[in-house]
Amino acid sequence: MKTSNFSRREWLKKGTLSLGALALVPHEIWSNNVIKAQKEGKTFLYNSNHQFNEFTPPFTKEENTLTILRSNENPYGPPPKSAKAFQDEVFNGNRYAWKTLNELEEKIAKNEGINKNQILMGPGSSDLLEKVAMVFFQNGGNVISADPSYMSLMVVAKSVGGNWKSYKLLDDAQHDLDAMEAGIDENTKLVYICNPNNPTGSITDAKKLRDFCSRVSEKVPVFVDEAYLELSENGLRDSMNTLVAEGKNVIVARTFSKIHGMAGLRIGYAIGKKETLDIISEITRGGMGITGPSVAAATTSLENQDFLDACKTKITDARIYTMRYLKDKNFSYLPSETNFIIFEIPMEGSAFLKKIYAKNVAVKSFKFWDKNWCRVSIGTMDEMKLFTKAMTEIFA
Ligand SMILES: Cc1ncc(COP(=O)(O)O)c(C=O)c1O
Image (tube, rainbow, N blue to C red; front, side):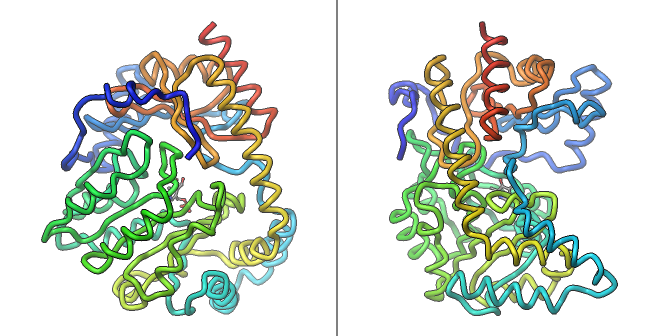
């Protein structure tokens, strides 16, 4: 684990853990909140509940002038060969993409060391997070996850009648696996682990996680969201896919949106025990939402490891540059093995966004653990220099 300038004492000062279920606000209420906030002139409020607040301004015509460091996208993708494959495949757009999807699944099965019937494809991994939530929580139950974490699965679980049991990350921003395991009760339907975690960027020790998943999956399925794992120091060597291969009730989700640079092309997948994935496929159809051109682009990207390696090197360099800057300026940041960094800001999130958007830099802000945070995605080195310049001007 890399160190940050977050002192241990600072962490311990954070006070009581926010254990227990947090009230989530369903999507409709969020949108009502947005409309209400806009009427009140608070246009930067987007998504809020009493303990986990995320801020992002509405999209505007000025987007094109912004340096976008907001959604953890890869500034270098898609790989040129994938873009070409996408274009060529458009001409087969009169057909459903089952044949090429089948070929992509064969490639994925080989890479992951599993059988083809252990894969569920989707238009992005969010689609799969949501489908899993819809199916698992249709009759209630609770989902256990970290606080804070990536909320897609929990939001949908809650909206269909499930509860969220959240466990604050440990002092070093790893998952509190012991507390999470102890929190499993007769109503627990799923444990969700995001590793590395969003929005913190922190990674949980692979050996500890593997032991946890191995043990816990005997009781309830464990969903491990590895959207950013390729960007971590050990990369896919730390994947929980080996547990899937061993037949454990573990679901691993991956996306082509991050290291492959295809967020806008919408493709991702989950691997797991056939019997568990069948429950989801009985109600939903994984591959139906994916376009043929996206399948072609993803297939080509899997054959372009050099491009992916080059992206990782450039993103890591820009992340180190940004961390050094934050350290020099005494901003407390959490350790990150991803293409984003979260750090504390000494002002309320929406006020900060107003200032940084005025400098044409788009980031996100959050409020959790009673603190205000900025999450900046790692762009090109030039983009990170624009970000640090804006920061210096704001906090001069
Ligand atoms: C942790 C995590 N999981 C899943 C996703 C969903 O990605 P996509 O739907 O683009 O595959 C994201 C997107 O930012 C994410 O941060």
